[in-house]
Image 1 (tube, rainbow, N blue to C red):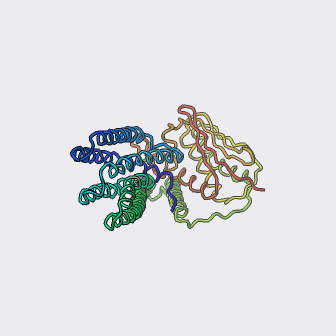
Image 2 (spheres, rainbow, N blue to C red; image 1 turned 45 degrees about the vertical axis):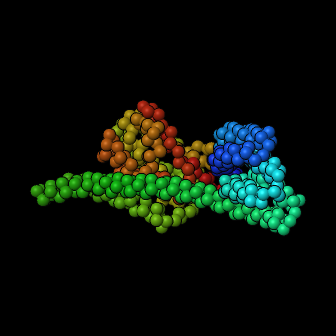
Image 3 (cartoon, rainbow, N blue to C red; image 1 turned 180 degrees about the vertical axis):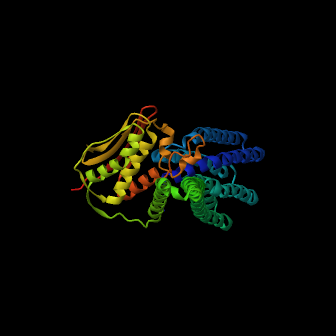
Length: 434
């Protein structure tokens, strides 16, 4: 499986975190080795070796600290460069330990020779894990650190030393195998950690969505209860009036009809929203005359606009559209009704205009305008109940939610522009019939 860029970045970070400790441990071992060697070997050679080890270790620690800060944004080429550079430094460290057998008079003290080999081999074994992130760095370290012992043991000869040389060679191969396994384990751990972090992030997002859905549901139930209460209270008052005055049916009838119409309108919207969200409602597409639909909708709100002394004007159109006639009429009806409800002076203009190869239905009003931060919330059912500063009797709060759902179902796009104190524009981008 190829190592992705993000994996390589994390591998580089793992290498730097482990390499610092490994280099520090080698320095400690170097002090111990030099102290023992000064007693038995030439002090000049030991001093030169120790100085070389200090120099290489210092350079490694310096560049580990320097390059570790670059791993977050480095590209693939940069990572390859870092790996090559630090692998070369690891090779120099391995060479420091590899020259030790050549500093001592090998073959005179088998016990001392084997202790030296054991120390070098043990250090190479510990590097299997500490250099697991960079297998090339491990190879660069272990081969120059261990192989010189095998070569010198072979030249010394004898059954013991030749056996030691062969065992050491096989040991190098075994360590390289274990290093590859450790490298794959590190990669698997990195990927598992990333997957876990992604799962945690997704769970947090789903938790937020679920909490928001529960909150909206609470608002929805509060809104339905509120909006049903008004027509029911009105019907109760009219019934009380009829009980007290049985002959007053003629006077009570218009009000009762209005209350029933309000309840019917609310329940229709609720049912339409429910059917759309459940996937039950499927658009019945046919070519319709948009001008006729527009005229009917404007006529329905003409009296309400006149009662508020505002102008309601429509731009005539002969556009024919492939759409669901009932949904299209509901969209236009809700947008005009919303404009009439919230406009107290001035006027409202509705009509279509061309935008590229499509038609855009627009409703312009001179209402109070909408704050920019509230525009994304306009199409949530009963969202107005989330703001106690709003007038809760200013409409059902379902019209725009239904408009948004119907537009999505028909493949239309709705957008809103508004300026406080100047008015609003609601626009629905339509697909024109061929």
